[in-house]
Length: 500
Image (cartoon, rainbow, N blue to C red; front, side, top):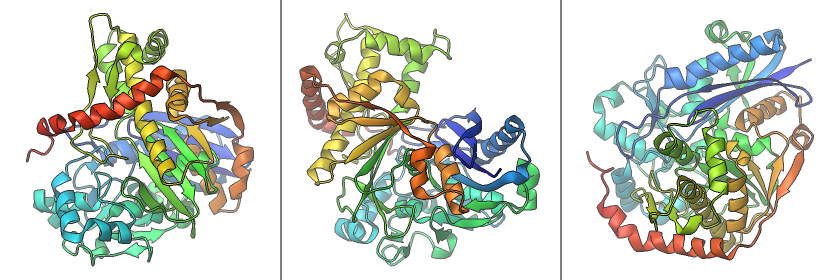
């Protein structure tokens, strides 16, 4: 029997699976970690502890649970939160904490400057994406200007998945899907790095080698084998961002397929026949040549449920807190008894791309309960998601089918509320493990143990959540859209995230 290993590093938790040739999960493991917020608008991880430390611990747990010979593992694939920005020295040692994806808004000034200097249309044409808090290029420029002592020691700028692969194989690589988030340093037409748009950010030699996600990047080194328990010489793929692996895990592969990932953030990927050009959304080559993906993502989603639990439900046992809150929210009617919630606690990504947006509860009165507030949080996230789905429809890219995945699919109010507000059905597959399972499938494809269509047998569909029309929710959505627009100037005036 041959097995494949998939490990994913998430915002708050890392997960791993060991899978046999038929897609059966023979072992699972998970390990929590924190997202560091050293100041407003910043978000970081510790690469050694949160990325590599989790990978090592999870791999050893999987091997111990499955009780198999690690020589039976045919391939390893990884994914991680992204796109991140991490400078490392010549020995591959991190020089600072990893700067996270669009939830980190520290480079707002660099985004504005580069957009003005290069031109928004030129950036969109060449890079496929407008410069936003999701873009890595401005964060590298921020590093160069604000931490020159670190930049001077930097040999490579990599991302979270690249860091894992380098630790496993010694190779610095990145997949094209992730690289497209390095705007303005990646050209979507040539599928290569470019510096002609901004030659003052970083030399191309400091960026990883480009590969497709399921290509073999290298092989487990003796040192990595000693740390992880894997066998030296085991193939390792280039890997990808967690959301892409999550999409793979539920069978997103054909044009019109859309993944709705319910995690720390809502992240959406839709496969398209050709590149979708619109500054409100993101674009990237998909995981294989001649394929395209259009993406969207909220800045904070599941992160908000964690925030709410930690601030307003501290007396509840941690292991049952979310279940209790869900019961309280279910007792509140649709519309949360008149509360509107803006989920912009770390600014917002798509479709408004406003790093200075602010979160808010609006409409509070003395009769409101914790259940009303929690329901408002869930509906606020669903309203933000509905705004994204509406944007796809405006572009003639309404999804053919939506496959839901992630921990949030266990929250019935959240799942149903999203379908009701966005007016779309959502398909749920048997396994909602997510990105680590997609990694294991990609690893199997990389070494010929599976073909892309086999995912339908690995992870069959079990149910569909159908939308129900609710006039209250429809009205709340329109008011949600108006509330942001009519308070945007106040939110910007309150901004403290841009302080030096």
